[in-house]
Image (cartoon, rainbow, N blue to C red; front, side, top):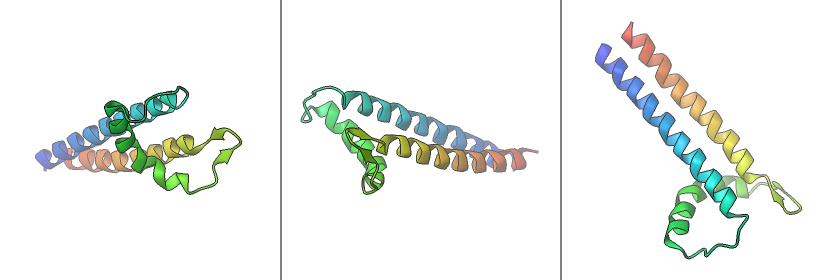
Length: 99
C-alpha cells in the first residue's frame, strides 16, 4: 500500500505543477492582451491553443463590463477550485495509504 500511496502523492504533485503552469500561461495571455501583438506568431498561437479550452466555457457567460473582461478571473477561480479538489483528494488518499 505504501507504493500506491507514493504514486498518488506523486500524481498530486504532478497535477499541482500542471495547474501552476496553466496559471502562469493565463497570466502571460492576459498581459499579452494589453499589447498589440501578432496573433499569427507561432508562440502566441501555442499559447492560445493551450489557454483557449480553459477560457472558452466562460466566454459564453456575460462577464464583460465595458472594456473589462472578467473571464480570466472566473477561469482562475474555476482552476483554483478544480486544483484544490483534485490535489486535495489525491493527497488525502496518499496519506491514508502511507500510514
